[in-house]
Image (cartoon, rainbow, N blue to C red):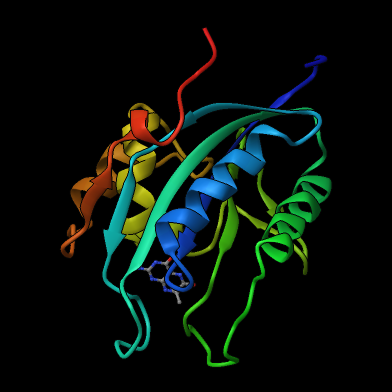
Length: 174
Ligand code: ROI
């Protein structure tokens, strides 16, 4: 990893076609991205669907990457992983999906372009983002100044349940 590098947090979600396998495969794919190094990964969590309730529960997790890629290049790489893993959507807004990889945060950057908004617009109120993020970055502060711990304290867990422990998903090289 050449300097300067960035620290990026990636939100992952799936509720179709073996969601646990989807997330495990995505985490493996993150370890193979050029110009990136996987630093941490949360446990996998089962979560109630946000949006239409007539869809399966989701599996969610958050990963931390060190990356020398520019934000839009990182976005394209993540979209390619989604495509390789057969991303399908049924067209319904907030409907089920095989794999979502969202850039949540990049350092303390604020990005507002049509292709990419960072911090991710929904992250402050989504238990399936905040709790896994807190697992790997308990002291995090958002660019707006809010502490992650405060956001978590104000966000009901809504049944969120850890289903695969972090060390069963990925282990740092030693
Ligand atoms: N709901 C949950 N629980 N987890 C997700 O990752 C998720 N992703 C989405 C919508 C449809 C908003 N609902 C979700 O895109």
